[in-house]
Length: 536
Ligand code: ADP
Image 1 (cartoon, rainbow, N blue to C red):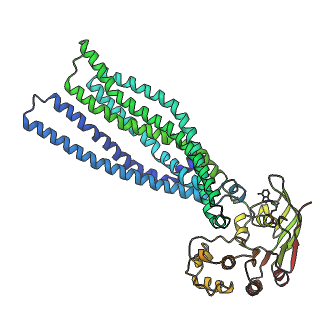
Image 2: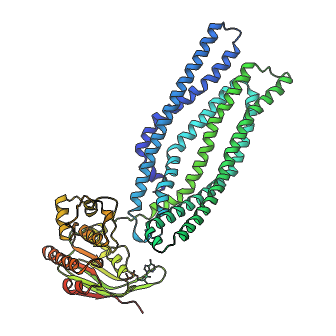
Image 3: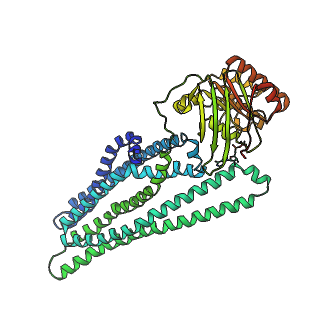
């Protein structure tokens, strides 16, 4: 499905609201044209009216202006309310897609670039998607109505106006191409600024410890300079478009009056005061729809520029094949002659073999760089073997549904991800479990001394690690994967965690896979081992 079709589905609830809002905008446009027309009539017939009639006419014009003011405000409010809701829907949709991407695709994006696509690019795209068609139609109708009114007043003067307006469109065709190119560069530059800011702030502790604030400030300044350059370039083209609009709009009444005067001198027409005033009041009101089209054209070029970036974000979403076999329990897990080679040719795993069943605890050891993390990613199905077979319950893993497998494993990662919320929320991690259960698990993981309603971001390294374990234990799992579960713990706490894990395994008969360097864990928890070596 194309991006456009996908977005139309996401925006379906918004599209329903568009009709009344477009109607309101249309009425607003018609009302805006009444004062110039009425004023022209008033001046045409000034001699025929007595004083009271003229004042009555002026009163009507003032009342129409008041209605116009209210309508203008109402259409603006409802229009933007609709657009902001739609933008929110698109951002949420893109965010949900982004966090479903597979591991390899995610590696292509920096944090800032991803943020930029979800927040900025989505906003630009949503604006164009929601408003493009109605804005085009409304503004073109607006222009046609004004031209109709002008024609009814004076044909040659109107034709002169149209001829000048044609120049405007030629200028635009040329400018558009440059706006699109500059907009893409600008948004890529913005991604880089976000990435540099977020990664440096995330690592500010280390930056300060190394006393390298100046280096990182300089690095950021360089990125901002580059971004500034792109912004200025984009503004140059946008400014040209807007200036062309203003100047050509300024020339329109002049062109009309020039032609009017010429015809008047040649005795071809007699231009009345009502016509001249109507032209002077109506021509500037052409400025509104033309300016709106100009600005909208710039937005549409921006949207075209970011479209490819959004397509890329959606294209790589992990697809779950519904034809695969669902599993409700993992009875065995086997690696048979597994090898892995990264895209750049780095060979990491070489002929890995093992089988584990419920009750087993497999220790995975090996020097740094031997491939333990790669092996873990393969267990989590983030990477797929280049050679060999993974068997789940004796079946080739490619025939087993991803989601049902992932739901049966729990993982304690080395760097525990803590989000900005309470310890309880961080342990639950979206799961529907009671606070009492969380309290019980926290005690098992030596976190009983903490107030679980406290914010988790203030926990120490060891406490974070135990929170990670509590989070894993709170899942329903058949395989528990522990990546260096005790590195941050003192011997006493390590012993307590080992006891907890042994009790958990006795109760649940699950499979443990433990990456560890700890002799204590190796001896007292594991019954099998797999030694990783670097390929020669
Ligand atoms: P360990 O966890 O045992 O320290 P890893 O699995 O992290 O080892 O890494 C094993 C080897 O694979 C290392 O040489 C590392 O540089 C390389 N490696 C890791 N990730 C990638 C990648 N995305 N692309 C290429 N090589 C990688």
